[in-house]
Length: 173
Image 1 (cartoon, rainbow, N blue to C red):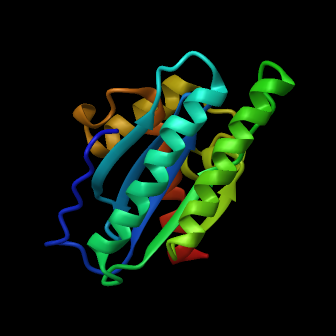
Image 2: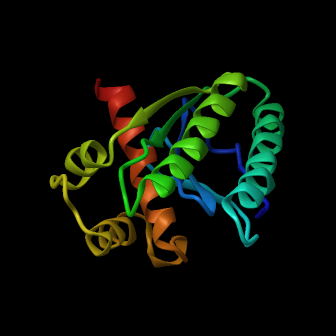
């Protein structure tokens, strides 16, 4: 797991956490009320099977969220959104992604973070104006909004847009 540092000096209001889940990792991005990029983190595993990877990175995610909760010390409310699993490739892959997404949402709930699932076409339509936006379009939007150095992986761009969707939904309804 990468180390996450949340600089709370300039944070007023809420933090918005976007989570993009796969069978290999959980990518997380935090934005604030001013839609500024606050932090990113990835919990992942390179183990061979999903069963091994799931236990490896999901335990790290679970532990990290409890530490993040202590760091925030209930000073800054957290609103979170997890991209809902979509049917891709095959049923086994879909079940794996749904397992990770479900664990991510539950871990958020246990730590007191308001969290909901969001369909990928919903956040894409609301943020990019196009429900079937491509990976390239998502990354281009994210780079234009927050800068190139923030997105070493595509999944961070997705997570940032999911966090932005949650922020706008929370503020604008």
